[in-house]
Image (cartoon, one colour):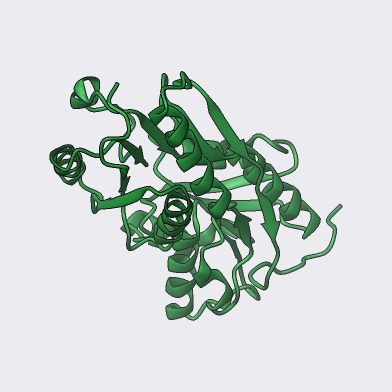
Length: 275
């Protein structure tokens, strides 16, 4: 294994327009700098070919390893011939060291909170289900209290927060859902904006929750109730694992999972207890 030739590592992220990822990049860079490592950042812009081009560029610059948040569920063939250590963030794949949050825990926390606030009929704007991170957020919520919470409808959308026609139609009809549980904060913010444009007041007429606790959640109106991921700790741990790999340590299958926390703000109305 090549080690220590450049003291540079690559960081490949899927979408820097999502505020979660710049915050993650900052955490990675801060820790890397403290260890004397240079970070080369690639934004794949949500494109598989952009991801492949980014990997090729990093190889041209002879980085010593790559920290990567993959776009899709399948690992690209070129990864087999990479000859560099790879550490994954957020999206686990078999055989690789990975760092991510406890998404199932986050879903369960939201389900507990929904019941505490009196919401028993819920609409889901789930994230892309080919990603384990999105599936576990959804499953953690749905499986927590299946006899107590009725899923009125579910639509899957991208993590970029762009609402499809199907999603807009579901929000319009709502089918008596009193709470919309979104797969991430961008989806939640997109839903709140669309509902506002349609004259629907959040949380007075319908409540909304997110996931990630990006910085926008505290400045939108209403301020968004969400699940906080420890982004700083995730980024720092990924760099630490990369440093171990670069030193020759065998950690290919190590998995680090961080707990998450509910952040209660203003986007969920208390309906009282229902009998």
